Amino acid sequence: MLSIQTNVASLEAQNFVTVNSQFQNNTIEQLSSGYRINQSGDDAAGLATANQYAGTVATLTQGVLNANNSLSTLQIADGGISNISTILGRLQTLATESASSTFAGNRTTVNNEYQGLLQEVNRQAAAIGLNTGGVNNSNLTTYVGGASTATNSQVNVNLSGNNNAVDATALGIANSSVAGGGTTFTNNIVNLNNTATTFVSGAANASQTFTFQVATPTGDTQVSAIVNGSVAGITGADAISQLNTQLSQYGITASIASAPGTTSDQTLQFGGSTAFTVGAGAVTNAGTGSLITAAATQTAVNTSDYNLDSSSGPGGAFVAFASTSTETANFATGTGSQTVTLTAANSGTLGQALSYLNNQLNSIGISAVSTVAGNISFQSTGSFNVNETGSVTTGTGNLFGGASGGAAASVGAVAVNPPGASSSDTGNAIAALASLTQAITNLGLTQGIVGAGENKLNYATNLAQSQITNFSAAESGIKDANIAQEAANLTKAQVLQQASLAALAQANTAPQAVLALLKG
Image 1 (cartoon, rainbow, N blue to C red):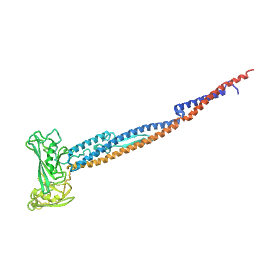
Image 2 (cartoon, rainbow, N blue to C red):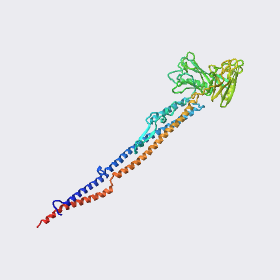
Image 3 (cartoon, helix red, strand yellow):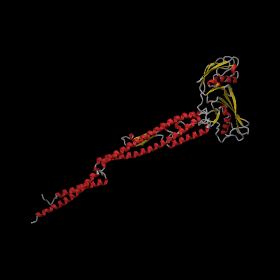
Image 4 (cartoon, rainbow, N blue to C red):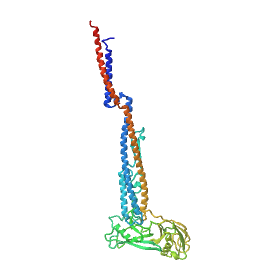
């Protein structure tokens, strides 16, 4: 039907012009943005999925940065631990040096370096945050992402607790020392390193005498070591030097105690493998500045050895044997045993008893030496046992069992005191070596956790980067435009647009054909 009221062909052409224009505009938009989806209407479901992928990629990207930062922290800690390990090696060297009984140097100098290195361990542990309670002495959590739950999105490196701290206290070496050890006087608190105090002072001829009873193969000998002072006094170090000059020939060493946190710290001590007892006199000639506290026990036994004072037995102090009195005891060490029988003939005096006992006991490594109180101290570098097999029978006489002149009141084992850990020249150093061995083990465990944490973070980073790639590819597959296809579509859209416009022009001129019917 030919009509001038409704130009159906034109309407159809107009519709296609609109469609083709939208097609062309959409194609240009995709080519310009690079995205297939530029608004929700393009693909609402696809856009929602793509946005989830984009969020995951953003989380993982930051997670990789988090992991790298945490890895840097662990690497810093790892470097610090390695350096502390080197310091522990030096500490072992110093301890080994001081642990040798033939060491001829100054243990105080060695210990000064040792203590300085302990402080350096503390400083470096704090610098890497692995001191006790430090910032990294905790459960380090790194959020990497890429998992369905928060727990699985985190990497934990647990460095919490004292076991994972690497300062001297946590490693168990804070109170260790390689200073020369020795026997101290009970209740003595005189600090010989106090530079504000002078000793043996007040008179030109002021002096203080230390009397030693030193064991010999046939008894013991008395040795007097005299510290000479002056009006102005001398230092603690000067006093130690004077004592060592006189005592070195007897295998006895004087030194200043190093027992931080105890009352014996910085006080006078005597060490050595020689069996000895020592008594301290007062400062003479109206002098002052005693090297030990006046109220201190003025006698001491070499506690660096296994020791037994005869007065510690059930029968009390030694009593010289007389008449037909006898007392029998068995001494045993790792090298053998020896039975001694004390009688009036061999123990009528203290000197006779010491001579008899040393003649009998030296072969199994036990020495007998008198104490200032007139008792007998048995000493040995190794452990020994004493069993009394027969106490006093008649008359007077007593070593360490039974009442004087009485019947056998106590027969059996007599307790022997073990040496103190820091009562020998080398005791502190040997104890320090044991502590350092454990410290190195503990440090290795912490370093293992740090190393494992580094590996975990590296693995987590690798996974996150793989996920970033794959999630980005998934997002791209949904959201990105196919440029080749859209370029072809642009050509197609342009041709269709031009064709629809040409068709519209033709459709608009079609009603003019009606005029031909009206001519006539």
